Image 1 (cartoon, helix red, strand yellow):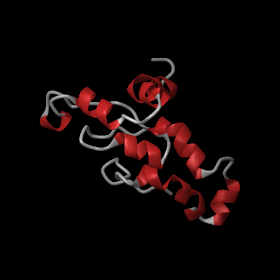
Image 2 (cartoon, rainbow, N blue to C red):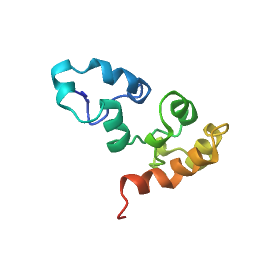
Image 3 (spheres, one colour):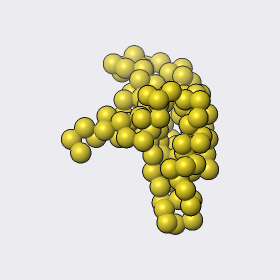
Image 4 (cartoon, one colour):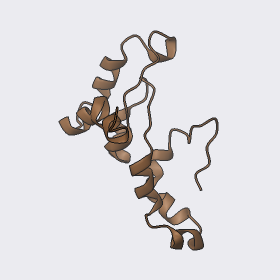
Length: 112
Protein backbone atom coordinates (compact mmCIF):
# COMPACT_ATOMS: atom_id res chain seq x y z
CA UNK A 1 0.00 0.00 0.00
CA UNK A 2 1.32 3.41 -0.96
CA UNK A 3 -0.05 6.09 1.30
CA UNK A 4 -0.30 9.58 -0.11
CA UNK A 5 -1.04 12.92 1.46
CA UNK A 6 -2.60 15.56 -0.78
CA UNK A 7 -1.79 13.39 -3.79
CA UNK A 8 1.93 13.37 -3.08
CA UNK A 9 3.87 10.43 -1.69
CA UNK A 10 6.57 12.80 -0.40
CA UNK A 11 10.03 13.73 -1.68
CA UNK A 12 11.84 10.67 -0.31
CA UNK A 13 9.43 8.11 -1.76
CA UNK A 14 11.22 7.50 -5.10
CA UNK A 15 14.49 6.87 -3.25
CA UNK A 16 12.80 4.08 -1.31
CA UNK A 17 11.65 1.99 -4.26
CA UNK A 18 13.49 -1.14 -3.21
CA UNK A 19 11.92 -0.89 0.23
CA UNK A 20 8.45 -1.18 -1.28
CA UNK A 21 9.20 -4.75 -2.31
CA UNK A 22 9.78 -5.90 1.25
CA UNK A 23 7.20 -3.70 2.99
CA UNK A 24 4.17 -5.25 1.30
CA UNK A 25 2.39 -7.90 3.34
CA UNK A 26 3.41 -11.34 2.03
CA UNK A 27 -0.11 -12.52 1.19
CA UNK A 28 -0.70 -9.49 -1.03
CA UNK A 29 2.70 -9.76 -2.66
CA UNK A 30 1.98 -13.39 -3.53
CA UNK A 31 -1.04 -12.31 -5.60
CA UNK A 32 0.81 -9.59 -7.48
CA UNK A 33 2.31 -10.29 -10.88
CA UNK A 34 4.97 -7.58 -10.47
CA UNK A 35 7.08 -6.32 -7.59
CA UNK A 36 5.77 -3.01 -6.18
CA UNK A 37 8.96 -1.28 -7.38
CA UNK A 38 8.35 -2.54 -10.93
CA UNK A 39 4.77 -1.33 -10.86
CA UNK A 40 5.89 2.06 -9.58
CA UNK A 41 8.51 2.38 -12.35
CA UNK A 42 5.91 1.54 -14.97
CA UNK A 43 3.00 3.63 -13.71
CA UNK A 44 4.21 6.61 -11.67
CA UNK A 45 6.19 9.73 -12.48
CA UNK A 46 7.33 12.60 -10.27
CA UNK A 47 7.67 16.28 -11.08
CA UNK A 48 10.22 17.90 -8.76
CA UNK A 49 10.36 21.58 -7.91
CA UNK A 50 13.18 23.52 -9.62
CA UNK A 51 15.02 23.86 -6.29
CA UNK A 52 15.17 20.07 -5.83
CA UNK A 53 18.28 18.23 -6.99
CA UNK A 54 16.73 16.01 -9.64
CA UNK A 55 20.15 14.62 -10.59
CA UNK A 56 20.63 13.34 -7.06
CA UNK A 57 17.10 11.91 -7.00
CA UNK A 58 17.78 10.09 -10.27
CA UNK A 59 21.01 8.71 -8.90
CA UNK A 60 19.25 7.35 -5.83
CA UNK A 61 16.29 5.81 -7.62
CA UNK A 62 15.55 5.58 -11.35
CA UNK A 63 15.93 8.33 -13.99
CA UNK A 64 12.74 7.20 -15.75
CA UNK A 65 10.61 8.39 -12.82
CA UNK A 66 11.13 12.14 -13.25
CA UNK A 67 9.46 14.64 -15.56
CA UNK A 68 10.07 18.31 -16.20
CA UNK A 69 7.35 20.65 -14.98
CA UNK A 70 7.12 24.28 -14.04
CA UNK A 71 4.67 26.64 -12.40
CA UNK A 72 6.32 29.55 -14.19
CA UNK A 73 5.57 32.46 -13.88
CA UNK A 74 4.41 31.69 -10.33
CA UNK A 75 7.05 31.96 -7.61
CA UNK A 76 7.31 28.21 -7.01
CA UNK A 77 8.13 27.75 -10.71
CA UNK A 78 11.30 29.81 -10.32
CA UNK A 79 12.74 32.36 -12.70
CA UNK A 80 14.67 29.87 -14.81
CA UNK A 81 13.30 26.35 -14.25
CA UNK A 82 14.93 24.88 -17.37
CA UNK A 83 18.32 26.30 -16.37
CA UNK A 84 18.02 25.12 -12.77
CA UNK A 85 17.00 21.61 -13.78
CA UNK A 86 19.74 21.48 -16.44
CA UNK A 87 22.31 22.47 -13.82
CA UNK A 88 21.13 19.76 -11.43
CA UNK A 89 21.31 17.21 -14.27
CA UNK A 90 25.02 17.84 -14.85
CA UNK A 91 26.80 14.54 -14.45
CA UNK A 92 23.77 12.56 -15.60
CA UNK A 93 23.77 10.81 -18.96
CA UNK A 94 22.35 12.43 -22.10
CA UNK A 95 19.72 9.69 -21.98
CA UNK A 96 18.65 10.73 -18.46
CA UNK A 97 18.61 14.41 -19.54
CA UNK A 98 16.47 13.67 -22.62
CA UNK A 99 14.19 11.46 -20.56
CA UNK A 100 13.60 14.17 -17.98
CA UNK A 101 12.77 16.90 -20.48
CA UNK A 102 10.59 14.90 -22.86
CA UNK A 103 10.89 11.10 -23.27
CA UNK A 104 9.63 10.08 -19.80
CA UNK A 105 6.40 11.98 -20.48
CA UNK A 106 6.02 10.35 -23.89
CA UNK A 107 6.58 6.92 -22.34
CA UNK A 108 3.86 7.51 -19.76
CA UNK A 109 1.45 9.12 -22.27
CA UNK A 110 2.36 7.64 -25.68
CA UNK A 111 -0.78 8.88 -27.46
CA UNK A 112 -0.20 12.55 -26.63
